[in-house]
Image (cartoon, rainbow, N blue to C red; front, side, top):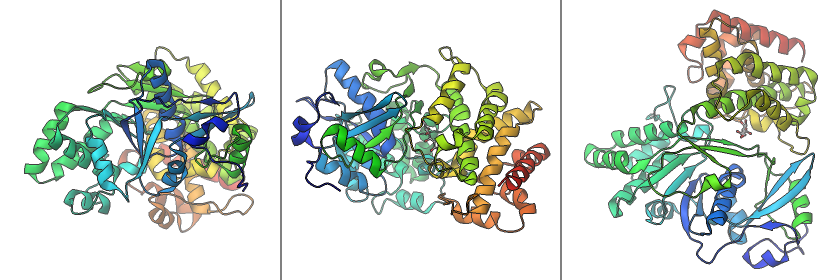
Length: 486
Ligand code: CS2
C-alpha cells in the first residue's frame, strides 16, 4: 500500500487528476435522504442518480445520510473522505472513474442508533431508501414479517436499540410521527417482487404486533402519510478488489478506500407514488411509471435468474467469475435458453423495452471481461434469491403445462452447489446463506435422495412446487447432468 499518495477527501479534491468528473458539493448541501444499507450497490446506483438529479435541478438538499446495517466498514471508508468516493466503470471500451459527492454522512446503526432514528424523523428528510438485501427484510415463508425472528422480537419490545432494518425504519417513523408527522416516501431498492408492497406490508405487520395503543395510531399515520413506491434497480456492482483500488489510484491521483466498481449500464424504474418531494431522478435517467411490475419481472426473471444459473453452474465447473462462465459455450447456451425458453413466455413486455435486445444486452453485460464478478458472490443467499428470481418462472410454466428445463437446471445447480461444497478442481465453495445450517443438513446424505430432501425445505419451496412430479423430474435430470459432467 502506497502511503505517500494523499487520500480522497473534501480537502484533496483539487489534487484529483484533470479530466476526472467530480460531483460538486454545493454550499446548500444538506441531508434530505436516509439510506438504510449503504453497501457498494447504493453507492454505484441511487447515490449516482441522486447526485445527477441535484446537479440537474441546481439544488443541494438531497444529500444522503447512509446507514450501515451490520459492519462499520463503510463508516471507516467514507468518514475520513468526507463521504466522497469513486465509481470505477469498466468495459471493453475502457475504464474510467468519477467521484461522487452526494453522500454527506455515514452512520453505523449499531453504534449510533439514536442518530438514525432522529435522521428519519428530521423534517428536512423526505425520503428513506433501502438496499438491505433479500434476507434483510426478515420475512417468513409466506412473505410476512417473521415474528419468530429473534431480531424482530427484540425490536418489537423496544427495550434496546433496533437491530433489524424494519425495526429501525418503524422506530424512526414513530419518532417522526411524534415530532411533526410530515409525510415521507419509503423506497425499497432491493431485488424483490413488488418491493414497495413488501415494505408496506412488513411495516404494517410490525405496527400490528406492537401493543394496540402504540401500534394503532402509528399504523393510521403510516397509512395516510407514508408512501411505499416499488422500484426496479439494475447495475452490476462486483465487490471491489485491491487491483481495482490500485487502478483507481492511478486514474484519480489520490487514494480512495471507499471505491466501488460497476459496469457502465444502469437502470432505475420507479413507481410514481411519492408522499412528498423527491429528487428529480427522472432528470438523471430514471423512468417514472404507474406500474413497475412488468419491468421488475423482466429484470428478475431474465437477468437475475440467469445470473444465478451462471453462478452455480459456473462455480461448480471451477470458473471464478461470471465472465469466465460466459466463455464456456455450454453455460452461455444454457443462459440463452433459460431466458428465451423459460422466462420470456411468462413476461409482459413493458412499452419501452424490446425483449430480444434486452436478452442480448444481458448476455453482453455478463460477458464484460473487465468486471471480475465472482460466481461465489452471486451464489450467496440462494435460499432467499431463488424464490424471487427463478421459482415464479417455474410456477408459471408448470401451470401452462410446459417444462421449465433451464430454470430447473439452475435450481439443480444450487442443490449440487450446497451438497458438494467443492468445485470441479476440488476448491472449496463457500455456503453463505442465512439458512446455511438447514441447507447443509438437508443436503447431507446419499446423492440419490438429494432432490427430495432439498425440496422439503419449506422456506424455499411451497407445496405446489414440492409436489410437482414434473419439476422434481426436471431437477433430478439437471442434478444427474451436473454430476456426470463435473
Ligand atoms: C446479482 C445481482 O448478486 C446477485 O444476486 O444477480 O446483484 C445483480 O448483479 C444486480 O441485481 C444487477 O442489477
